[in-house]
Amino acid sequence: MRAAAIGAVLLAAAAPGSAATRPPPVVEGPFGRGAAQVWLLRPTSRPRSIVVFGHGWKTSPPSAAHPWVRQFAPWLTHLVAGGSAVIFPRYQLGTGDDFGAARVDSYRAGLRLGFARIGVAHVPVVAAGYSYGASLAFYYAATAARWRLPRPVAVDAVFPAGMIPGALLPRPPPALDVLIEIGDRDTVAGAVGARAYWRWLGSDARRHLVTVRSRGSFVADHAAPKLSTPTARRAFWLQLDRLLAAVGG
Image (cartoon, rainbow, N blue to C red; front, side):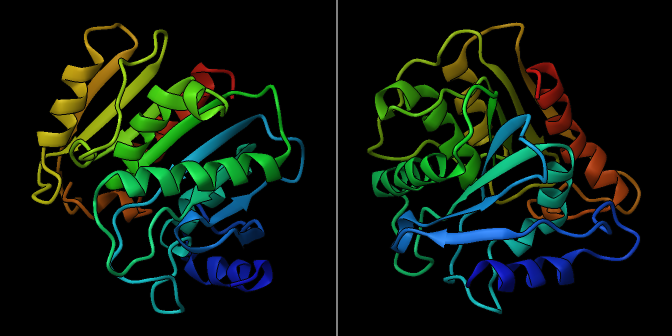
């Protein structure tokens, strides 16, 4: 899908009355090929920060029925309106993918292309992700120097999946702000992956493990981060906003 087409898709996804009723940003891309593709979103002025946003595991390739960028359209629109550029890597084909190191390689290739095309330097980078994308955010944070990519200063891991088999995960870098969120009704990712990364991180005042609680009509199951309701925005969007503010983005 080209930029104009995806922009129209994003507009359709911005529900009336939500935080995303403002006009959506133009989505550039996809750039690259196959699982190494990447999409870009930019604010109208020079970005104050860059958010690498990793989607969850997909079982279908991008199409009108399964548009990967649109799934998080309100949240991405909110990030761009706040002054962040967004790099949205594909990292998988959507059919016949394995869960192992090949996904990390595709994610890395997408980031390389994304950073090369975004053309912005000397701004803080935050690695955000949901489910499997949250797991990838940790691998990026730990190996950014080896990958010769900008090192993220913070990680926002929303309902992370488990460790990625066969992929290198060095010791965590120092001075890394981290928020890991677990849903109290998440039966897909659960707490296993989150607690594995928590143990890997070790104790540090900059690192926080939080359980998102269900209340009222809001159910903190695995699909909750895809919502744009006021409660979901407080549970997920606001936390990323705070991380960005803390690192100067």
